[in-house]
Image (cartoon, rainbow, N blue to C red; front, side, top):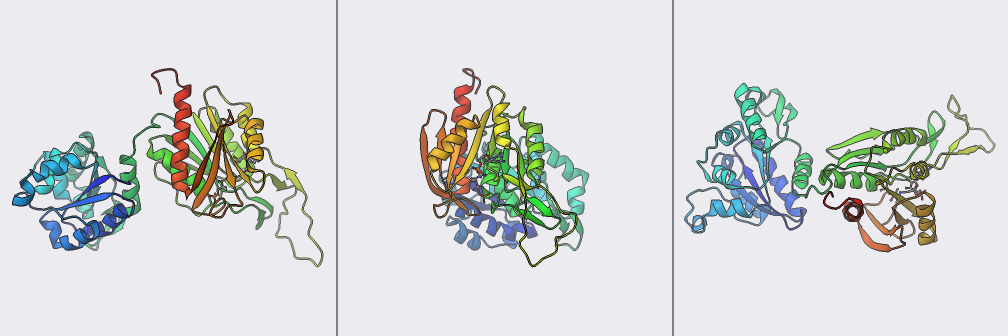
Length: 404
Ligand code: PMT
């Protein structure tokens, strides 16, 4: 979102107050936000609030002499990277479907060629009315991106569909619309999180992987319009939108899920921290505490990534991670070769802010030719973006000319 220009259109519904928080989210993410309100929206939230949060004057008058000196509505329509309409009332949606341009907001809507995200919010009966449904279908046909409203308790004391979509969902969709679809048509599998290996019904061996790195990779690929499947061990994270999540618990389950999909994938990134061992025996009941020591015999788990490397279809890009506490480059390079990978992401667990559970990661990316690129300690989402940039270059190199 950094450096992008977003025009937030607010129409007159009770959810207009939520637009203030949306402005904050966009500004915090580095976007420049211009707010345009309808006359009715000003009954629900003041322009001063939105001007303070966006740091820019709020537009609402079509015949504002100052703004129209440079034909303000056309200028606003041309300079925006994305228009977000939140809340979009039944009235605004109807006007858009009919192509009516009778105020500042609707003239910009008609004049812009930027992608346009419609976030409906209204009473459930108004939403379900055939006229509104017909209008929404028209907007979709016109190429606008229309979100589904949330269902629940509405301000008018009724239950049903009509609540403004959640702000995280609006934010994520806006981010996707602002991102070039550079992975469109690519099928991508990402693994994330830990695996759990039980030795009785309530105890298991595992590691502190939170899934943050893998979820960031999946979200970033989905934003680039890839078809993403995320096979994840147990985590407390909310799955990214637009990603097919396959939840698993044990290494055997992760292997079954990954192996079942691998052959049809263009790219596989294994960021999961897979347990290398599992208890040989799983007690059917909770083990009782005894005075002495408890000995558990461990059996080796299959190496999922090594198996993928053996059966890799031609053209597929296989990426592994290596979590290391010593000899980072040597150990990672050995895994790259042994597992027949195209790239390995060496994760230095000794560096602070890097590895398990953190919001940031510091990695070294090594390719088959031995070229290494150090990425500084960055938020996991930024690491994910840089990794996809690198993987996209590999895909381009592999594609026959003119097909990437
Ligand atoms: O989840 P987070 O809290 O965000 O933490 C991120 C992370 C530290 C888990 C991640 O960045 C990372 O380094 N993941 C790999 C951890 C790991 O298990 O590394 P490894 O060196 O043991 O395994 C090497 C590679 O083989 C990995 O791609 C792993 O997924 C794969 N593997 C390992 C063992 C096994 N039995 N099967 C596998 O497929």
